[in-house]
Figure 1 (cartoon, rainbow, N blue to C red):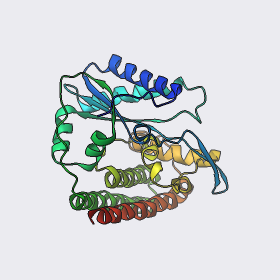
Figure 2: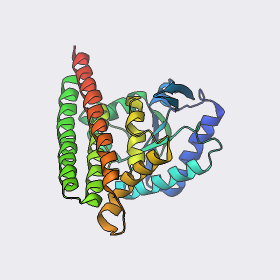
Figure 3: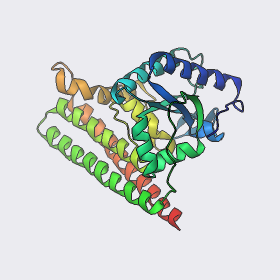
Figure 4: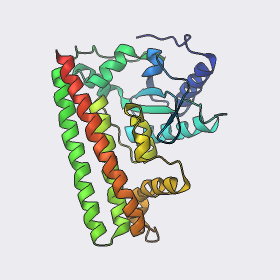
Length: 296
């Protein structure tokens, strides 16, 4: 694997050095840190601004970072990485142009198992990734040659499971709405969104770390379609309020008796989740079809 990021501009190198130093100071069990995705392939977008859907849209490529650990649970490592992510954004001088960071953490033994099984997501990281840190205590397993027939089958199975769960939650939310149980309906709509996002991530990467924060989930899939901005535009105070209400429903919809959700809120949210459902189906089925073409 490659080990140099000198081809990147100095500001990107500084960002990545800050990220690596923060991880190593907070997670002593770190074995390797790997940059993957567009910055590793050198086809990243610094800043792209377009007028779409009646407003200005901008896009900045993410830093995709795989953190490999041993002797620490994924849950604990994930919480620490969330804090590091917050620190990273707090130092940004221009948030709109600051590359977002997307962390994925995995145990070394699990990673090597995934490589031996030829899991598409991790084999691509090993093929294209750049090592930012290596404790040199472990070696990555040999990656099995990709079998796109297996990848297509895995993607289809993942999609069927998570998309089906999203649809079940959607129907449950509509039932709760019919009973005027709006608070619980908001929580179940959150669960529907979560499963649709999971379906997309699994189809495209065959990897899916547990995540309940809708902002993080949305950011992790928005690269696959520009149409996500139609689902959750957040370009007005009301759109932001609705998205934040849906996001907060994961906790408050279950445990806070004072969490206020109105009929009008659910009336506005159901069409959004239905739009997310349709977009999930469209882009996931297209990707699965592409795997079939790769077989040939």
